[in-house]
Structures are given as structure tokens and as C-alpha cells.
Amino acid sequence: MDKQATLDARDRDVFGRNAVRRLRRDGLIPAVMYGHGENTRSLVVPERELSHLLGRISVENTLVDLKVGSGRAQKVLIREVQRHPWRPEILHVDFFQIQADEEIRVAVPLRVEGIPYGVRNSGGILQVSRYELEVQCLPGDIPEVFIHDVTDLDIGDVLHISDLNTGSIVPLEDPELTICTVVPPTVIQVVEEEEELGELEELEPEVIGKGPEDAEGEEEEGEGAE
Image 1 (cartoon, one colour):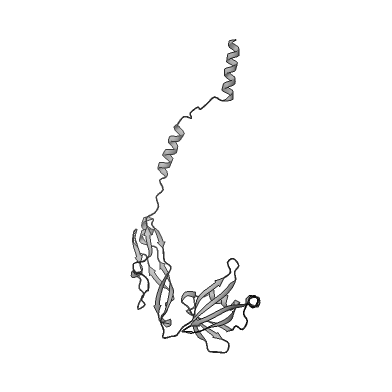
Image 2 (image 1 turned 30 degrees about the vertical axis):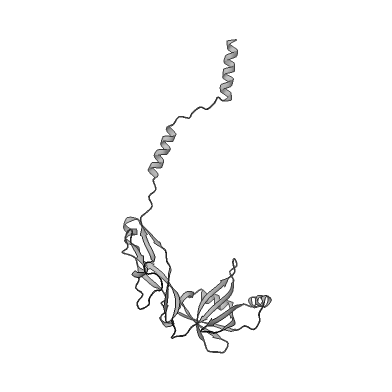
């Protein structure tokens, strides 16, 4: 995915529910840009270009050069994308303006690679509990992804945040938080269930009462005796 991308926008000069509907019919998505104590700026961005951008970047940690009208492009992060509850539509997007010399908090994707030893040789299961890591760094130092090789993990081994190699970037989260672990395989007691089923089949059914045929047979025997 691209580490940096571009997007064009223009100032939004119409407001209200009906105006927003007209914008969306025209292929434009309402947006805002804020940051650094400046007033929030209302914008619109082309829906087609925005959808294409969102489909090829890591939204959480990709810098976007946002160019508003004929002005100079400004570096922003996409902070929030509001989508329709059931239709594949983007309703609104928030851009956070950043400065090259100011540290920011971002969520960087986490990815584990390799097949753990405990999975290959003991039938264990790799359970992953975290897929991103929050860090604080300069915009130019934002990692695209943190990758860790889990090939050597055996049954019961745990990978913590403190085990990651993040270089000069210090994670903001608890170092003892678990990223993934290898757990033993689940054993199903099939033999015991089969034995219990066999015991039930060997039991003779208990006669609770007499059926209609038994009653008729007794009546015929009684008539013969007369």
C-alpha cells in the first residue's frame, strides 16, 4: 500500500440536510479538516477519488496530501470515515492536519509471519489478539506496519508488545499486553461418548403399561374359558 497519497478537495459553501443530499447525488462527500488550534474547515471531496484512495492505503497511518482548491497541499491523516449502516456509501470524512515537526499518535498495523513450532509439530493453534499498535512519533517516521516472526513459538509461548522490534519508536501501550499465543489443540472425548452410547443400547426397555393388543388378548382368553 502507498505510504503517501494525494486527494483534491474544495471548500463547502452549502449546508443543511437537503444541500448534503444534493452534494452526494453530484458525487461529492462532505468533509472537515481541523488541527493545530485553527478553525474547522468545511470541505467536499469527490466520492470516486476518495473511495479509490481508501481502497489502496492503510487509513490509520498513511499521510495524505490534501489540496484544497488552488492552494498548497496540506499533509493530513484520515481520522474518521462515516459510512451508511447498510448501503456501501461514504457519508462523511474527517481530516486531521499535521505538522512535520510535531509528534502525533497513530495506530500502526501489526502482522505476525511464519508457522509456529507448536503448530507444526504439536498441532497447536495460533491465537492472535492484537492487530495494531498505538505509537507516538513524527509524521515522517510513521511505520507502515510492524512485522514479527513467530516461527519459534511453542505450545504455551506468548508474544508480548515488549517482544516487538519497534526501533526508535516507543509504543504507548502496556508492554505486557499479549499480541498472540500458541495454545494446545482441543481434545474431544469421543471414546467415552461411544462407550456411554453402547451402554444405553444394551439396556432392555422397561414395559410401563399394557398396549391395546395385550388387552385384547386377555379378553379372548377370558371368553374361551367361559
